[in-house]
Length: 182
Image (cartoon, rainbow, N blue to C red; front, side):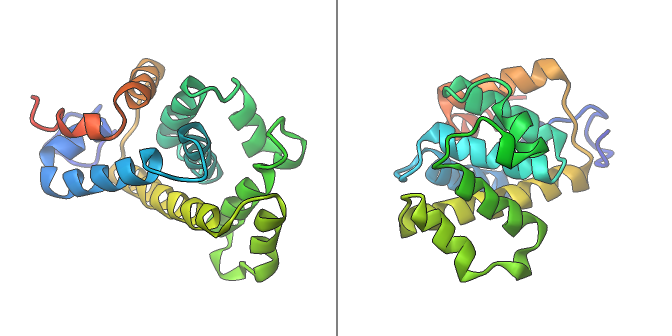
């Protein structure tokens, strides 16, 4: 239930963005650049990182929507739930496991990151740009998780599916056009 009393109790993040379009347009532009722009990671892999971080944070809203989006990009159903439950035994591509381990540790214990953590990502075949992008996706979704939880934003299963599919089809730039809609 939203803590913003001027908005409906069942407020979604899109409704918050409509109520506060100034920050929202910049935030959505950053999402678009980071999650759909050029990167060593595919859009599906970046959505997977977003969903994983959100799952580690137990942010059901973001975890649900970005799981649907990652699956729409081809991540097999159930992989993200398994990864959040136990990354080591999850059916995640081996090359991605060190990346998810890195962002998981960065989310849980950011002050404990070491060069060895980064080296594990590099040893899996990723370059510095990939580490940079993974860290930014991780940071963005830690921010988003706190925004969603701090404002009391929730979504039902139907909205989660609709939102995830909308992000697959229109990206984050597509949401900017929805800010003016009532």
